[in-house]
Image (cartoon, rainbow, N blue to C red; front, side, top):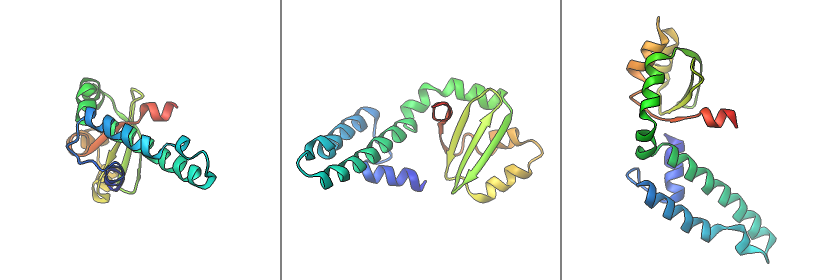
Length: 148
């Protein structure tokens, strides 16, 4: 959740922002911090490059967890969590990455360590994930991120 909060603060948006509004805000922020505006000063140009990379990353991340994006891929997600088994998972800093047997990968944010420990010790990890993780935490598809 820290990552989500950081990106929202960076773009100065709330969790209720719609995709259309997010895109407008993103474009306006990029206009202000684009490196091409600072051609005369190399130090400012480098700082603008670093800021614009963070803004781009924040925008793409927030788009990936937006309700509109989630709704557009809900059928595929439901199919995966219902029928696929868990191939692998990794936990770090309240972020749980799960790779399913159909090749799909999802990142879940704000997962407490206690929930992760219960997942590890569950007799059926897929069933535990379906009941206690998949529909309880903010998630995004990481399949494209892994393939890239």
